[in-house]
Amino acid sequence: MSSRLTPYVCPEVDAYLREEEVLRSLIRTYGSPLNVVLPEVAFGNYQKFNALFESLGVRSTVYLAAKANKSKAIARRMAFSGSSIDVASLGELSDALIAGFSGERIEATGPKNDEFLKSCVLHKVLINVDDIHELDRIEALCSELIGPMHPVRVPIYIRLAIPRRITNRPDRFGVPPAEVAAAVARVRTSSYLLLKGFSFHFSTDKVSERVAMLNEALQTFIVYKKEQHPNFALTDIDIGGGYLINHLASKTEWDEFISTLKASVLQGDQTELTWNRSGLGFNVEGGKLRGSKSFSDYYQPKNQFETLREILLSPFDDTGSPLADVLRDLGVRICIEPGQSFFDQAGFTAAKIMHIKKTEHGQTLIVLDMNRTNINATDQEYMPDPLVLFSKTDGSRDAVGEGFLVGNLCLPADFISRRKFFFGQPVSVGDVLLFMNTAPYLMDFSESTTLKQRVARKIALVRRAEGVEWYEDENYIHL
Ligand SMILES: Cc1ncc(COP(=O)(O)O)c(C=O)c1O
Image (cartoon, rainbow, N blue to C red; front, side, top):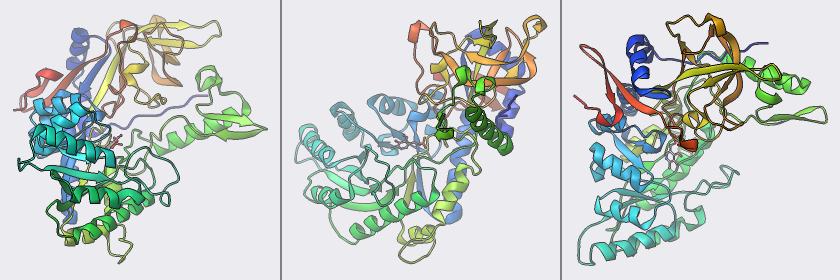
């Protein structure tokens, strides 16, 4: 039994992959693992989001969600574009300011300690407020920092919780529907707060749920927009991130993989596909298949831009007109906070094969000079096949056509993935595996120096008129 999951590689990234000598020399110099980031690809995604909003005539702001990748080069590239940035910690705020984003182009989301909130206020960062108490905390900090006579206003969004009638999956964030009026009342009596809009972030793969939530936010917006109040400057609805991206070249391969996995779990013979007969979330109870997959949908039929277009062209509940038309007529600015979709295709991870061995049970292990933390966001399985940069020395002696990819940690659980990988052409020690599209979260979200193994260096590749140039990520220069 063999299975392939060919990664999707866009033409621009494919052209960088052809620079084999540059890649070989970078791996020689900076070692394994190595993260390659592609600032111009990220910029291209930004341009596509903008073009989409322009084609619909909807005012927009794109806040790149900094949490999805720590690259300083990409942040710097984007500081030189019209993009804004969404930061979720004091560290991310500090990096954004250093990259060149002024406070007015920054939004702060997520849980915030006092130091983070104080810096947001001082830098005029828009604060995406998660609950009523956060409003009180900002108010208290403002009186401490600014003094009651100072005319400074703190721009805020009130983040709306997703109502139960839209989803029954609990989510820790947002102001519950029953408390929104109280939160707005708190803004009315404030000496500092300026309500710019309402926001939500909804992790769902169902467009219908997102559309329902945009309708909800728009209804809320319309109610308060009618009210003239000095503490209201309502212009924005922030619909967050969560636009899914496609990692794979073939739907057929993906469907076949899932059906083979399910069939082999049912028959109890998945040893050929996964490590230690793991069902990757599936199991059998009473002869029936139970559970759900412990990995995300690496194949997506639509890209992020198509999904967003579909959302914006869906009907407004009150009138049936496309939401985009209603938003345009009301002059609403739609803000988005794309993370994975902003960094889509904007980087990959290279790792060298250190060693190949057989276990006592006959399985082939391909040991890489990287570990699970170097390619893992939320402890889900990594699925796409790596590409191979073959070493120039003859490795035919130890070459293998299939095996499990394991890491450099002295820990039994350090599997790059529990999926078995099958290679079109056998691989051997010294070859470099290229894991594609790791820039969205995978390359550095959970990276750690566990066992004092190093984390990957980041190198930014840029195509200039004279050819491809590279920079250490922190030393990137935008020309
Ligand atoms: C508030 C907020 N905005 C944006 C994002 C980015 O989401 P994604 O990477 O799915 O686009 C997240 C992710 O956790 C988030 O919590």
